[in-house]
Image 1 (spheres, one colour):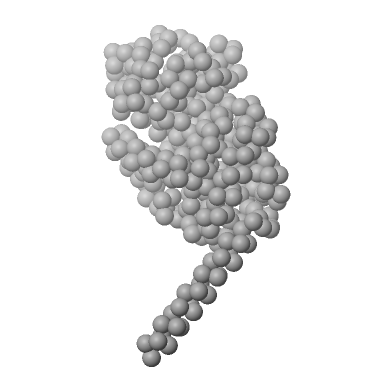
Image 2 (tube, helix red, strand yellow):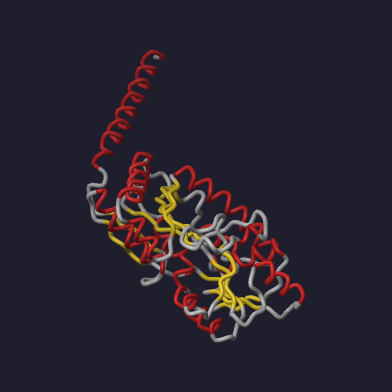
Length: 325
């Protein structure tokens, strides 16, 4: 009896092993069908523009169509929840920005868990966040802005594209780490925020370069610093925040995730394809043309970034008194 039981266990184990081998052997054929890329943001914005660039180049590399589907709402939560519920077969992916590590501290019900409901695939770009001021403000550096804010409590305010945006959270992190005193003025989008700062209604603006290039060129806005860890090759004269506030480093990053339990072979296939198009196609140049910086991170590095930034934003939100609603 013991012998027969052992034989059945061995047979089942071997069959399971053959099943796994068959699954792995099938992976070179992936993708055999069009892949759906859910973009949890509205059409026409920076995330959507870059997602469509990525879809075109990634589709060419994989030899299959990548269909972009916009599912905006609740800061990206609605689209992300739909991908969390999708089959983990590699045919439904989500385009993400670092809102996925910020939203848990803004919403009581995010609808999905970036740590447990998704498999990191790859990051492909970052977009720097700038600190800018109206030219009338007597601050020509970030250090002077911080000093002005401390000397004039309650006088400074800053504009962003909205509550809970990476711009807002980055500014709150700057306030916590530097002691800068300024009040948040949220807008419904980057355009309105920039227009009012140019018009003099608000003195400070937190924005991405793509949304303010024309105003900067015309001398209507003065950039003081970039929140990236290093100076950009495109604007080497612009200092980083961490040159004034040591240790400060935040930028908006962009990547792809799949539903949890997606076959690691599929994840690796996608990650390798993204790394290749960043190196060998015109994708990197197209990213630079809209103010994004090519920046590859594979599945492990992306997962480590998510864990690290969840902790960082938890600390920043707590110190800034931000509570989920």
